[in-house]
Length: 219
Image (cartoon, rainbow, N blue to C red; front, top):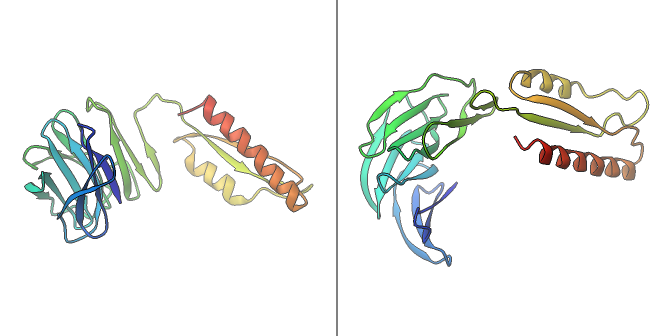
């Protein structure tokens, strides 16, 4: 489920559904393992400031480890299934969970600092932080929340209309309306592809257009 590098760059850690954390060297050799949770581990992160490996599990808890020894274990009675964890360089851990909540934790002790205001209506699947700890990005099934003022572009690629009078599928426009206000949407269409070869060519055209747009608008 998750892979994270040690800050020194000489080893990495993996974790998955068996609840075990495994350590590997850069040559891919297995260098040890320890059981960390009884439920699947969904995410790993490394706190540089505290020199601790942090694991978030579907059992609704976080754990911190130093060379296989547990430093602390933390939970919140209202927290349900930790999907993702991320570390700030200022000694703070952020967790995202199925209960739609982002929480900040003390990386050294595991003490809960605060629960952040909810910004999503669906389960938060992943989070990332900037090194200085001044920015946080969270992604959920319903969309992405990010700092304001950054332009975002989503290209919806479609091979419709396939022939004259062929209507665009309603779900495309429904999706565009759902995303309005979160990202800028553009419809990239290639029309009148009656035969299979034509549709394949149309897809290639759309893919090239999307690639160019992504290069022009990387955000």
